[in-house]
Length: 165
Image (cartoon, rainbow, N blue to C red; front, side, top):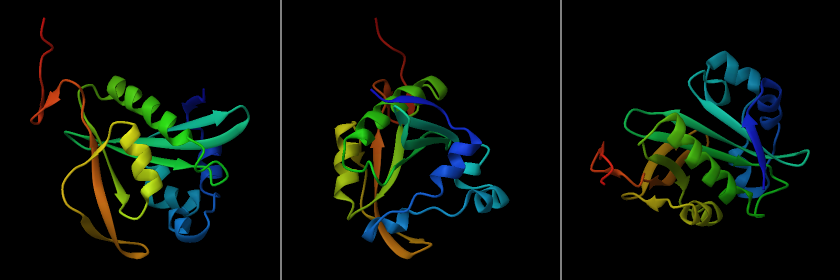
């Protein structure tokens, strides 16, 4: 079972140093100083960031951003820990936390269509593909993404329904 807590500034700086291999290198983040200067990503004051540990090892982070009727969900796994099942556990923990912080709001994310490993992780955690492929500009050119959604048990048709007897 992974341990977790709200991310510290030092942990956010460390997360920005992670480097991924091959096609995953596009997930490398800019420096934390750049994020702070532009107040985006991990330095966005409206972004809630949680870090996850296996003993002393920082295995990943997740973030939540209240986006009106839904909550945007992001996740990053330490390059040395990818493919070891940490993402599914982290996603489950963050879903439960999102329901405490943003009751009744579903989570959504965007994932590159070629990232089958991440898509399987999200599906195991209850996300489903929501709609058609989205093509959007990124820092690395145009990318194709799936929007995935995890609804709340009582969330239906754009509103929270009262629980029945």
